[in-house]
Image (cartoon, rainbow, N blue to C red; front, side, top):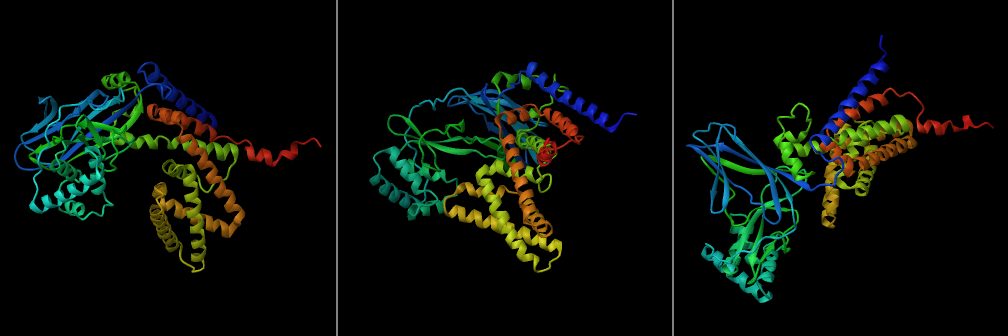
Length: 507
């Protein structure tokens, strides 16, 4: 009869072979890069159009990107189940058109592209057109004229005028005319800037695009402004008044047309999910073309919607943190407060950065222990005590976030990434441990948890490990095999070897 140890060894060996074998197949057959940084950063951008039915036939038009400002679009895909689909060319623009004679329930359409930045060039110059006169009410026109008069006296040209205008219409503005215009304007705030520029005779147009942020979901189109200063077009950020096209901005359209039009539908919405990966453009295109041919062997998350890809990009790092916890507890002998506590703390560190996360965690837990000590004298039941600690932790997190915002410490606002329930349970377990075992044991297990969390954070934040887990998720099977093998380890831990070091002394 095969022993349990032998069964575990056979199972672990199979998992290791399957995981490594699939990885090698993707490297040598599909052309996946084994080392990050050797290829271009390719962005996968998935647009999701959702709307509800209305009366009559349905026609949805989506303006497609052109690949401006040095961006190259290497592949695009459309999902239009149950809809007729066509690509229409009009005025040197491409439109994706979905149509249907009747719609009875809410629908979702998808458009996905893969693009990379070939060069850092800006937008190509174009001929300037006269500024269009905005449609304004009488009171709005009076306020616009007064605002133009004040800003013109302070500016030396169209560029300086635009920068001052953006600042005047910002959230911290105290100008009464600017506040009046913002309060009476029903469209997006940047439209106010365009209206004032048009009234001032400065040619200006919006640029619609996407602010690139890896793993971001439910992203919507953002707007930049370009103005003509008499000799060239200059781009401005309507939020910061900073001149120049941002590096993390993917230009979708430039002339100011509406990007999405839905006829026969209501409550339409266009959202984007973003994922960045270090892959050559050729590999991405080949991967999409061969998805069906290699479906049985290509164990990849690229077949998932981009929104889910961003989620799994973080989730696939958790097995790495679990392996670190197993090694530190079974081989090194570090004692922690629970098994999963270090993993959750490491996940929080991924959002807050290491040193700031350590400071926030120690501060919250210390304050919570003091309050928990006071609650223990009230002889509350366990459920009430835990609930009270949860509320206190939330209050402490909110107070810390508000205080940091008042002091201008925006990084501390990431305190919300710490799991509230885990912090509450940490405080509860530490306080019980303090009462039963003393302060020394609290320091040992608390310090051990933080030490393991730091090592797990170091592993999870590694560019190489992040690249391998995302491009080769089958390696998770190999990690499982290693963890199963370590689960049968019964030898001495490193801390025990140090503890019994005197037994090996020949004296």
